[in-house]
Length: 283
Image (cartoon, rainbow, N blue to C red; front, side):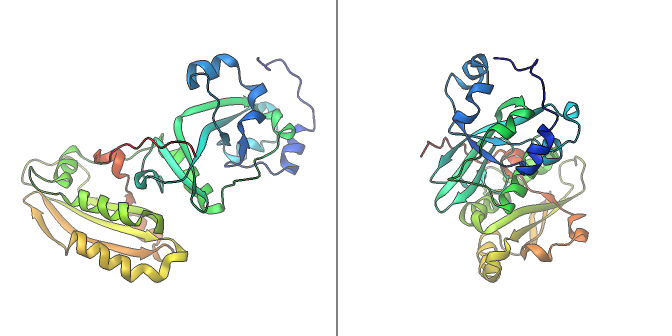
C-alpha cells in the first residue's frame, strides 16, 4: 500500500518537532501496520510482524526542516527478551544488539530486519509506553548502527595469534570470558595493537586492552581489575609473535581523547569469530 503520492501537510515537520521524535523511539508493531506493504512483511519477515519497531533514522533526519530533504525514515524490528546474551551487549556484535529497557527486560535488534516509511506518518502515531531507551542506550544504539557500516579490521596474523595456538587458550578467549562475566557493568571494551599491518611469522605484535566501567559501577573498578588480572595475568610475551602489554579497567570518565588515539573499540565477535550465536526467544 504505497503512499508515494500522498500530499505532505506544510506543518508536518513542525508537528514532528513538537512531538520530539528522536532516534531510538519505540512504537508498537500495530502502529506501523498500515504503512508497511504486505509484500515487505512476507518477503523480509516471513509474514510475521515484530513486537515493536524502533526508529533508527538519525534525529537530524527525523527533524530535517525541508520535508523533501528526508521524506522517509527507517525502522528496525525488535522484540523483548528476559535473558541477555553477553556478546550482544555494548555493541560488541555488529549484527545483533541487546539493550536493557527495564529490570530483567532487554530489547533485541538485528541489523538486517528493517523497513522504511514516509516521515509524515510520525505525527499520527504514538510511541510505546511500556518500554523506552534511556540516554545511554541511545548512545550505544547510535554507535552500533554506525559500526554496521564502518568496521576496523585487525590483521589476519594478529587474529590467529590472539586466538592461541593449538591446545592453548589465547588471550582473546580470556578477554571473552571476562566480558561474559562482567559485560553489564562495562560501557565498552577497547584494544590497542601495533603495528597495524600484516607481519610475517615470528615478528611480534604488541597488544593491550582497556575496559571502561559505567559511571554507576565505578566503585567496583578495583574488584573488576582483580577479576581481569586473575584471567589474563601480567604483561608478558605470550609467544614469539605476540607481546601482551597489559589490560586495565578504567572508569569511563577517565578515558581521555589522548587514550582513544591509541585504541579502537573492541568487537570480539566480529573480529575474532570466537563467540557462539544465541537465538533468544520472545518474552
